Image 1 (cartoon, rainbow, N blue to C red):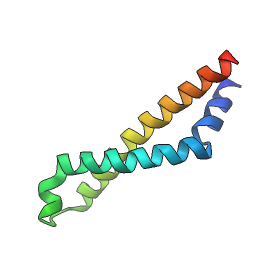
Image 2 (cartoon, helix red, strand yellow; image 1 turned 180 degrees about the vertical axis):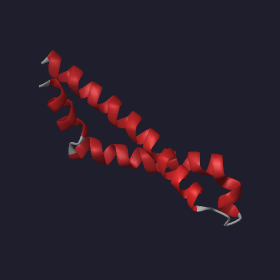
Image 3 (cartoon, rainbow, N blue to C red; image 1 turned 90 degrees about the vertical axis):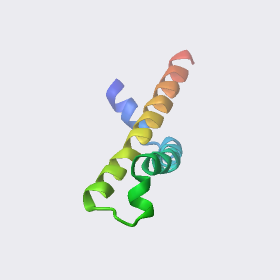
Length: 78
């Protein structure tokens, strides 16, 4: 039952929207930090693109997990 509730919250439109925005902003900053030289020289390989996509997944996961935990705590206090 708890896992089902976690998934419902995790994939709710509000959390999904915020997490995607966070991932795009933070992921872009991290991509420039980690691959800036390749980005500016237009030398990105398919492997670099994959790494940058995975780099965006990290802030998405952190934002989603944090929001989900906060929502669960709020629901348990009610």
